[in-house]
Length: 117
Image (cartoon, rainbow, N blue to C red; front, top):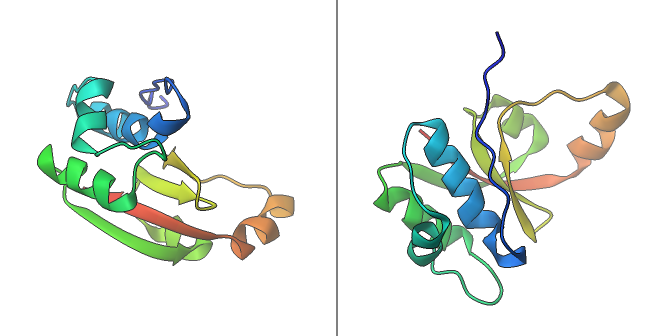
């Protein structure tokens, strides 16, 4: 049976990081409002920073590690995690399944991601 992963829609463009953290928290049985995670993440008009998300995650009991990683390294990381995609958007990575045609493009990209335990 497939695992059902939590999903929340972000309210606006600045909410992607806090919304990702909310989904990760819910995955581990922790319930937080988006508003509380926005405050903990120090959201600005530009959105959240990696540091802000890391501090918010630590404040709710997660251990974090922010790194710049290749796609290969991301494939070896414990999942789920939050990836900073192309320097302008946070996404939750629950699983990695790609076709051969997509592999080259993804291998050329770099990821900033925060590992969650």
